[in-house]
View 1 (tube, protein in one colour):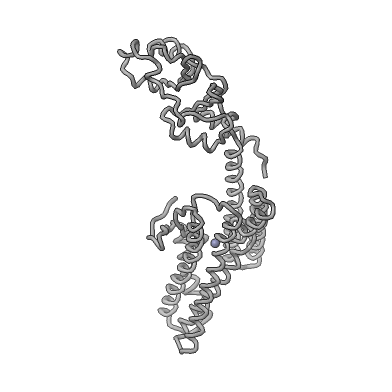
View 2 (cartoon, rainbow, N blue to C red):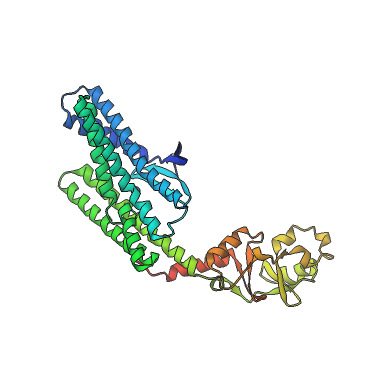
Length: 375
Ligand SMILES: [Zn+2]
């Protein structure tokens, strides 16, 4: 992702995506030459520029406050937060995992709109105090306008379409009621897509009616939301197949084995040079004891091949190299990732049932994708 690091706020890393400059420019431009001159006519140009810059800073600080509140509550619920990114459509708090319970999800999502409303209240309070204390009109107008924008931000985020906060709140309620995160996500992403198409239709309506800028903007936001909703659903489908899929589904069953007492020389001549496999499960007295691969053998000096036994060249079948047939695919992938031979053995009661390579996992994922229902 393109962008740069802005700094850390309350222990949370804040990044800015390059697309953010577009919205930053649009906001500065619309504040200084549209919004503020319309609300306070007849002021010098320099005042509008100052109002625009001050307003933009307040607005982006408000957005940051909104995302920070998500990040802080998520962290308190034990979910690691990678940071916040400001981009063209606002901000995103990146968490490394999803909420574990509907209650956590409800609180993590709900705090965002609450924070925006609190910011609106503080700015509104300042505006009220300032109006009574005779602060300059330019300052009061900025406070009032950014307070109103924060209310709009809270309301927009409460729309019940995933991945907006309102969609997450909706999802947490369905999750709580049905006990199924999958079903809840389906409902919330569907309503997210519906909301996205409604925004696109509204944008087209506005554009046709002559308000081209707002119209195009709404179409863009709707299109972004639609993509985000579809991506969330796809991610969930993957997660589902990884959790429900087991080692047995992905493995190559009854793999060929070589005896542990065989010399490496024989292994090369009788197996690697004669057959298409680049790895074998190793057996000793009928029990699986390890995996030997052509890469391991290549790393051994050829003059030691005649005297060295396969058992001394192989990767032994320690707990890290072995999975049970029922083990879920997340655990299998985790072990594959750490395996020095990029393979794991599937054992059942000490008997060899299969072997899993990275290629097996890819094939299995491809099959899962092909059979996943289209939504
Ligand atoms: Zn939010």
